[in-house]
Amino acid sequence: MSLSMYQASIPTFVRGLKNLSAILAKASAYAESKKIDQTVLVNARLAPDMFPLARQIQIASDGVKGCAARLAGVEVPSFPDNEASFADLQERINKTISFIESVKPEQIDGSEEKAIHLKVGGRELDFKGQPYLLEFVIPNFYFHLTAAYAILRHNGLDIGKRDFLGA
Image 1 (cartoon, helix red, strand yellow):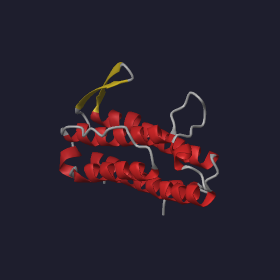
Image 2 (tube, rainbow, N blue to C red):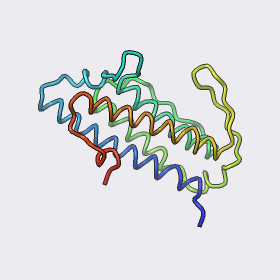
Image 3 (cartoon, helix red, strand yellow):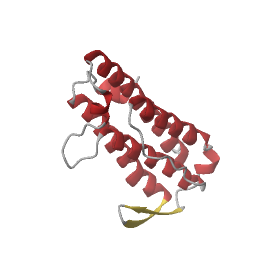
Image 4 (cartoon, rainbow, N blue to C red):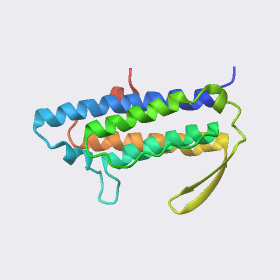
């Protein structure tokens, strides 16, 4: 049995976002218990030239909702990048999950050869559907999830591999 484009995308994205949501819930509780202003963590970064936690989550969200929409041939929903709290970030994750779960398998399956054109950081990129998903979106998604995890871990949150991978 072959793996479909839908199976390779939406369930993977939902799982990663739900695991991120659970990590953010722990981060919120951690900030409260340690009396840390949550904006310190939301704006934390690993290096001066690296995006902060909130931006890592925004980019992960943008990547998967854009992927689902482009492969399905529907409009990419636009979310303002204005999250300033854990509650805001949780809301963005929930909106992202709701959107990508609204895309049906029959909308994505068969998109392996679909032409995908996008602009990223001032560059124009062209892909076929399968390389777009497997070689661009999925690696970027995990990069930003990992960065978010690492930022929180670096700031003292007691999380580990099980949190990242989920149950």
